[in-house]
Image (cartoon, rainbow over all chains, first blue to last red; front, top):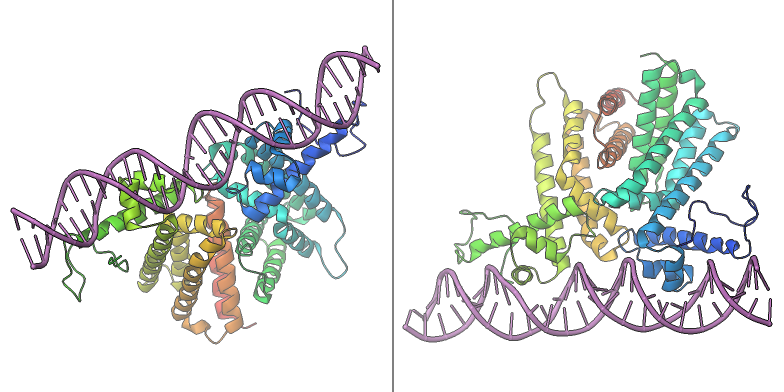
Length: 217
Length: 217
DNA sequence: TTAAAAACAGTCAAACCATCCTGTTTCAAG
DNA sequence: CTTGAAACAGGATGGTTTGACTGTTTTTAA
């Protein structure tokens, strides 16, 4: 099996070695497969994401796909890495820009994380997280990415609200509160849809976060 | 199928008709199967809850089980009804009793719902809810129970906090907030375990609920 | 130009699952 | 005691899924 599957390599970068291109560009097939797998997770759920369906959605034969990924779990592993990188990049990008006029960092943080929660990538990750509860092999793959993302979120939040650094307790509380509120909402919206009531919850959350940032316990 | 499955009937009650017992007592087999199915949901997740495994866990042959429930979906349907009744009864019971000394209705409500979230019954229901996202047949079965439970929770909360009735907005906000915080926490605890930090979130939630109950918008 | 390597296609066997089917035992009514 | 119904057992069938295997085309490097 002379296939690397450490890094994606879309078209024309990747420092280090001018690899045997042309054929290597068909590593885009890998990306095609990974994205098909993610679509399957979103559309069908983890259980029904079979190699047959992934291949069909990617427009490949099963044999061709098994050439790139010798087993189903290797596709999942690649999908986890891919999703993790994508989610992290999107989150950093959203947090790096200046708040819109009329909004502050709190609103930006809440809106940013909330947007992140509504993205199909989160749905895909969530499907895997639920499956991982009763699937140790999947859990072993997923857990590091989950930990890493949470850590990144925490660090980014710290940078975003430097004034909170001194109020450790309040910061942790606000962080946890935001996390739980938004995750709970996100999961509700897998089956229901967002209403005006939910927007009020988000606005209330913002209000409480500002309160926590401003006062000492 | 002349078998009732409205109520559990272990040994010797059930008003109305002195039915053809002895054989009817084997309706307890139905309960056995249903409880085995629920255990499977908790231990293995929805996808791996197969008729074979359920039968094995119930200590029956597949044929015997299929005699009581002609199809897998009929087991699931019965399990949904069973879970719904159980959860509802437990929730009502928890809310009906007087608060412990040193606690108020807010704490009782929060603790009660939180205890409910940590129960295996919730895990089983959650597994089905996630599967239902991509399984219309299951969704059709699960949705009414979900709606009913939510409605019951809302009504019970209203009775528990009559002083909130006038403050419609605040009540709805507090209700939604509680719901999302606790659901988010519960889902985190499917994979992690509860920490001191999480208790602080619950206590903070209580504090904010009291605040919302006391002030006008 | 030629030959090796990689991309790609499709078949096959083993395992598993849901359901159908035929038996066997238990029980209660006649 | 007989008879029929229900509880139970377990094999048979049809369908899926996975991963291995064989064969074909394209690409690249010698």
